[in-house]
Length: 450
Image (cartoon, rainbow, N blue to C red; front, side, top):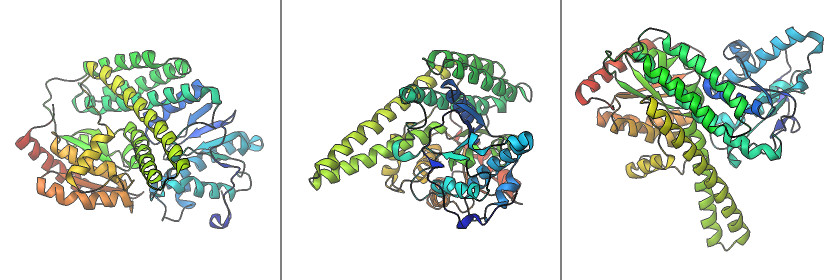
């Protein structure tokens, strides 16, 4: 696979942006396995031919067409796409047509490089003469990741409900795995249950998503949770409870973080990773905050058009946040009757933590706004350690580390930074062993959340 100099080629506005998915095959990069597959199932419920890309197999291709200055998730997702294209070329031969595929790559405004992934990936695709027709369809945080423009307008609202439910259910399925696997009666039982459960949930989401999927999907989830409870060995003593925060792709993508949760478990931890729903709720919450700020400015400057637009934005973001939080609360309420998984927090709770501590501000809209209060919450609410996961050179991850390290030192709370690129850090095992030794000591001194 050879291309021209990708950095000299402009991105085509006709093949990138909020583009109609239509009858094309929609390619979804895997960030979190459960979330990606259940989101694809939700799309299929609305007649979109969606599939999740195999991940990690195209890493060499990703490195070949990046310079090393890009954020690591950009390299991984580009490699996944190019690997798929190579396989399709090999499978279809002369019948291969790039315009039959749409790559689904959302974006975000702000200081994070995530907002530029799909632009750069568009440039790489345009450097291949036979890939210029492969479209990149993107959702943005600026309109709350609204699917309007991607699917039939009459199906937008029911799709939003199905997709939101799918994301929350995926979080619960992951929390089942992390809650049960350190205490399973036999090695492999939890992974087998989670994999079977994922496919069962995908089938229900795809079958019921266009109608009213809540009861059938959550009902199936309850059966899986009950099965998880049955494979816990009550004779195994509680282990150190470790929180995980950080950049959303790296902390969710097991290949990129080198299966960090499983490694921590191997050294005696029970881990709770921050949820996917946390990020979705944060987008709505921050949009609501920005709209309120815009309203205050419009009132001060006597700009009626700006006031009217701000009120409309406040209503839109506020309704989305309310629906997402209520869906999350309803699913977790029923789930926790079956299995004592870790609950989730409201974004407003995290902002209150920052306001009280004065260590950072939600006025700086990056993942640090979530990670910093998330770490403080863990330190003060019965956890025994916390891990900060982020790409090497990531600005929000580095900011988080700089802010929380002195706080954790003052509290005597175990804290570990784990920056990642495609290399294996030689001291990784030693750092984790040391961290887990500290976490066990913390457990002995302070106990843990029950």
